[in-house]
Amino acid sequence: MGTPAFAVPSLSALAASEEVTLVATNPDRPSGRGQTLAPPPVKVEAQRLGLPVFQPEKAKHPDSVARIAAEAPDLIVVVAYGHILPKSILDIPKYGCINVHASLLPKYRGAAPINWAVARGEETTGVTIMKMDVGMDTGPMLHVREMPIGADDTAETLFPKLSLLGAEALIEALRMLHDGTLAETPQDDSQATYAPMLKKEHGRIDWSKSAREVRDLIRGMTPWPSACAFHEGKALKVLSAAVREDRFDPAGAPGEIVAVDRNGIVVACGEAALALGQVQPEGGRPMASWAYAQGRRVQKGDRLSP
Image (cartoon, helix red, strand yellow):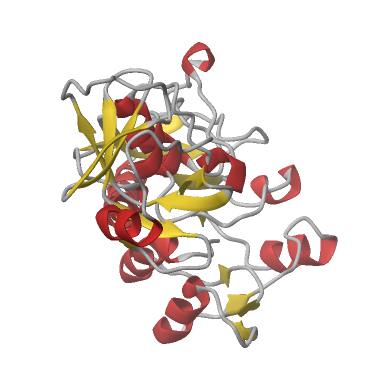
């Protein structure tokens, strides 16, 4: 059970090592400017592998539950399916339902663990193979694999890395299941953090935070919803940036532009300053912040508002 590209390596690996009898995924959705129906990536891969596909609108509907129960599966593997599974499905398989979750649980439970781990400045992430229960990513852990977050990593660059790591971890966990060595480790709920589904407002830049925190937000909100500020009343997405520890005179209030040079626009933060790399003006294309500054006649002393 899975939907986006993140789940494809796990499906491919699973099909190569186990007997997959059914693939459940979301229905085809309108996509692109023409809003033509497009199949989810998991459906495309399932069809390539010659596997039967089931696309219920709601997994909890009695007809959906009955269809899945008809397979009499030993195990259900869930990877970014996009639905909360009811107990009626969790109870179907002999060995339960297991989930490939893209964080080191109990940290970053929820819909967007990769984005929030980057946005909050974590230096290490990973995947957890977890036995599912009725809670939100609260079930016992079965297997964990870690991965460093590089200084230049964004959520966008981490997605494919963790996708492949998740597939590896899944197969390792299944080997242990076959060997009878797979053990359950309860999560420490006191250490849990939450990674909510992303909304546009999550990308709003608070310049009173340190330059490092703002840079991490920019990395975590890439590619969507993108970190965003306002210049002269119009939205300005900030797609990349670097911390500048230079001493600027005057230092500038948070959000104040303290330098405009060939390296681009430099903005004061609550601590240190941030050199903007790529930006995207409202209704425009991505460009270097220096090019934006030339086109809009941005000057030292101008402000970017939250």
